[in-house]
Image (cartoon, rainbow, N blue to C red; front, side, top):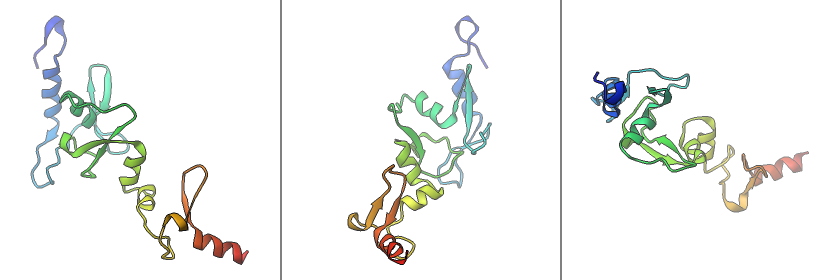
Length: 146
């Protein structure tokens, strides 16, 4: 690795070090799989200088793509260890959760309640805190049974 002015590593050195930790796409859908350090959630991390960043975000920003304030990068490929900048998209946290495979994302994508009633504006009760919804048909039936 070469050093730039005044003994500091240059951005090109960091990029070369970064790419040395990436498995090129083979039969993995075009994902660039990270071979370096990952956090407890399985997302890659990269140290550039004193700063440790999500590896996919670091590369995204190095390619002079901006993540607007208030947005985060969502993996479109649903592969947490992918660092391919074409596989991420800036979205709100809420949208990132909605698209995900966790319980909150799965529930957010449901179009019908567990008893088969459609979630329409007329048949949906939204909690005042905005953190959930209920089927009004089922809620009314439960109220009658009480």
